[in-house]
Length: 323
Image (tube, rainbow, N blue to C red; front, side, top):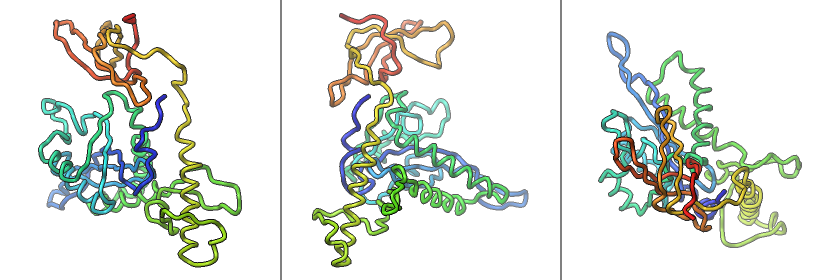
């Protein structure tokens, strides 16, 4: 298992490094007519801070580049400038889906490129079919869906409107951001668990500064008391929270790195029975620790067409090594 990316460990303002994903849609009543109500769909873009684990949800009227740019503008206006965005390679953002009539946001669209370039934002994609590499925001999507479903169960009779949906998203954001990041302490002198809301809203008075204070400054001046509390939360975030992120629960065995020229079997759930896509590794992409976790391979189809893919090594089975 690889180390955490550097942007997961960089201390800085919240939502400097974010992961984004979209989910939905939901049916809402846009206007009333004589025959009932005219319905339309709404989606949501979930931005996850990679350091504080806080989330921010923006509602999308449609899965288009224009709607996403508006949501991104609203997000940066509230949360501040973003330095880097991470996402998966799903059809929400990339993919030739025009023939399938799938609603999608094209990151390679010129409007989005211009918006990111002017803002100084870089967009990093994970390898295809590697959802585990974006587990931090995939987990938030799962948590958000559960909270949202529990709220909608009580309001489904009255129907959804755009205003109701936005209010629900705000409530969901507050609920998810109030979750404890570490185990709740049994120490009576430490009753408040660390949550993303404390880091985002700076309540109770959490401010990160360069100076350091100790407990002797706790009752001297009000502003020093605030800084003591800020240092306590900062130490708790780094010592208690970050240590839990680096637990390697699997992939702990040292194995040989996949090399160029290896013969591999591609795991593909979409192929027909008795079809075994076998390919040759054409390129490798080592991580910062010099271990290979993403490769490029070439497969020859039954019709003789050569196709190239980029896949994580978890989707490959080595049949024959080049050496």
